Amino acid sequence: MAFLALKNIWVEYGEKVVLERISLDIDEGAFVSIIGPSGAGKSSLLRVILGQEVPTRGTISLEGAALPAECGPDRGVVFQRYSVFPHLTVLGNVLLGLEFAAAPFAARLFGSARRAAIAEAEAMLESVGLADAKDLYPAQMSGGMQQRLAIAQALIKRPRILLLDEPFGALDPGIRADMHGLITRLWREHGLTIIMVTHDIKEAFGLGTRVLTLDKRRHDPHAPHRYGAGVVYDLALTRKESAHALPPIPAEAAGITIDTIGNN
Amino acid sequence: MRWVTAVPGRRGAFLLGAAPLLVLALGYVIASAARHSGNAADKILPLPSAMVSAMAGLVFEQDRLSGQYLFWADTLASLGRLAAGLGIATLSALLVGLVLGALPRVRATLGPLVTAIAVIPPIALLPILFITFGLGETAKVALIVIGIAPFMIRDLAGHIAALPREQVIKALTLGANSWGVVLRVALPQALPRLFEGLRLSLGPAWVFLISAEAIAADVGLGYRIFLVRRYLAMDVIIPYVAWIALLAVAMDLALSRSSRRLFGWAHGAAR
Image (tube, rainbow over all chains, first blue to last red):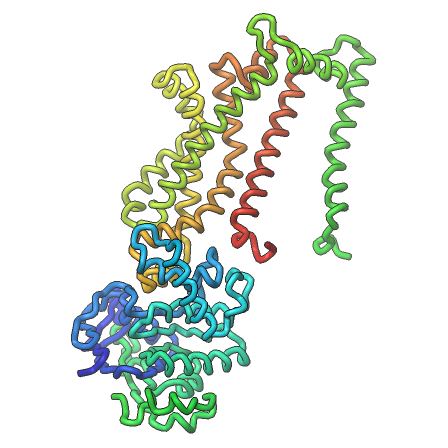
């Protein structure tokens, strides 16, 4: 049984069909990159998986159980922008997820529970390289640091699936390469299943174990909204070792989540 | 140096800002002296010395009728009404604006009502307030509240509703429920805007206070100004107006200072 299964998903806004006949099985531990032209419904697909949007037709199930169409802590997300809270410090941003879980009414922790949460948050910040920045506010940080924070903030909830919506699109090339190394390392360390929407084809192939291309299969020139996009290419990348964009694989992590059997 | 890029330094800005005020004061003194050289009993532009002596009576001497120091009694009464009005308006703006901005269903239900109330000129409601609440303090405070609360509510609700959708989604993926989103995402980001809205409402609040006091009061800054108007007592009116201006500036400054201190994150990285 597939880890995450999408069955015949359609997304329509009134007359306009955005996605049609999307059926996918995604394995646990996969790193799926989604590419495609603008307006092909990449972000719509991500929103459907996130639960932010209800598909017009079709079902999504996680390990056989239907996924509720609302956002919850089982699916983490990092957007291109606005992923961190401007009114909280770096530490506060990461603590927030722990506070929501432990204190449903006050949404705050006190005393020893708070100290334990701070220790956990600091360890997470350490692993994304923000240990020295924990008292800064997001406005005082660069775009790359803000995305590091957004990733740490999502990972503290230990989500089953991490959804990335063009997470590195606004970063300059050097920082982007650093972030590629970071997300690859975290993906292996945490055994994450990642679904990433990107415009950057090199990034899609460099990071992913599987690349999906969304585009319209059919096109009616008189009514361009009549047909939605589907998956036109579904490529399993089995030889990750040769990808030059990747940092060397740590010995102990090698082979844990590397897809050698093909994911589709 | 171009005009559009020439930014004065701290000292320069202070001197530039003070210059028009000094020119205004000097212009007044010259005009006043000119009038008094023609008519020593002129009441329209009293000399500074006349203002000082008139005010000294109100500030330092007990009123023979009521036994009060009128200037201080007026100030206390007006500030009390203003504080009550601003406090109630701010609190209701925070509560209503927050739920209106954060909860789309509540916005759909109550948004049109708030808009409808906001477009009524508050002064037009003053007779209703006087009839309903009598001529006491309640009506005056209510006028201030009705005058500024709708604006503050709409401003705050608009600000909260305009928070990036991504923030709400992110909070939900972090395990928040609707209450958690309101408490930890919307509320903290509403507070600096509330201070801003309060600052902008200070001017209208003073207008409504003075209006209410002018029509029905027995003590207060606005009451005094309109009372002594009958005697053309410009030597009292001008210092009172200056005092109101000073109070308003002090309140504005205190609000902007405390907002910067409390919500450094909202005022840029310069913390």
